[in-house]
Length: 307
Image 1 (cartoon, helix red, strand yellow):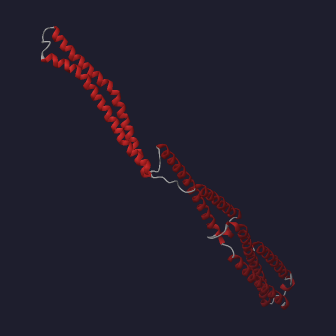
Image 2 (tube, rainbow, N blue to C red):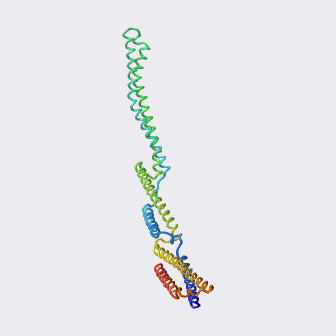
Image 3 (cartoon, one colour):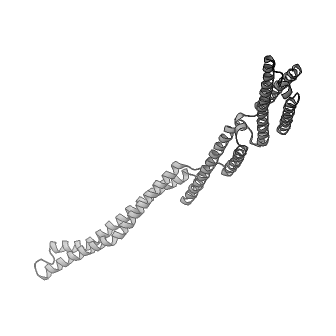
């Protein structure tokens, strides 16, 4: 009975040492990798690392192809657009005046003919003296009215043309301020700026996607973790899981050894010697030693892969 207790005490002590050794290995493994990686699905960790690489490459490509923003004066563009609107309005007014010229001339001619016709009727009907002042005034008016209509129409056309001419310097000043020689060149610059703005938005979207992917990666791998070292990180996580399992199994083995020792001591205290025949001396200790040896060997292999 005494030999059995001695043997079981040795088994319990060896199991306790194995627990301490497993806990030491687990502490080293736990310090080498974030707990979030240990608890995460390896496929998810790898997917997040690949997402960072893909979005980072896309963001770099967009940024490199973007280039600097083209020079463009927004204020000068507004001045040119205002001048163009004024010129269009003046052009429309000139066109309207020219269309109305014929109507003005027609009115002048009609009034002139009417005056002469009225004078003729009065002379024919002997209601007015042919050489009288009234007839002379009507004849003079009949000739002057078409001339006056022509003058009014011409003055309106000249005024509209002068208005358009006065607006052209404002357009030239706006183009000069924008560094352009023509409205077409200004429009081309505006198109170039619009294309750059669209590419800038694409680059910003790519940068946002990259930032989101990096955030997800840091959430599982820790801030500062390198995506290129994802294989090493996963190997360390596997080593930590193996070490944690070793601690659990060593703890179970120690509890079993302690329980067997306590049962034998209790039986001995009661004076029950039959337990000596049912308690083997070696198998439990051998099973514990073999199991822990295998766990240590697996932990060392995982550490080599992680290193």
